[in-house]
Image (cartoon, rainbow, N blue to C red):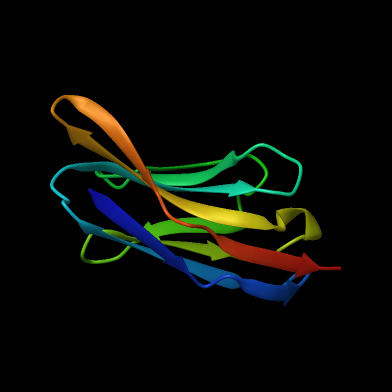
Length: 119
């Protein structure tokens, strides 16, 4: 089992910045990727950004140029630097990690952290 713990959410004014952190612990041996998703009230959870074990990254079009995903030195931590925040970025942000276990990619999720952007 892998446990994911997020931190860093909060309330910020439009145009401001926040940095989210996520640490994975437990039975970690072959993480394929770590990612961030978000879910706004009344909407489905959506992809935000991901970083793969080789270091490549991918972003949702809505956050490109404003958000940056990175890993810590320990490789089991992931960060999301969010700049130029907009009210539409308001959501619960979830950390995700995918790990290969017995030939299958298993996904783990954190409990979520609230990000609220006021106009």
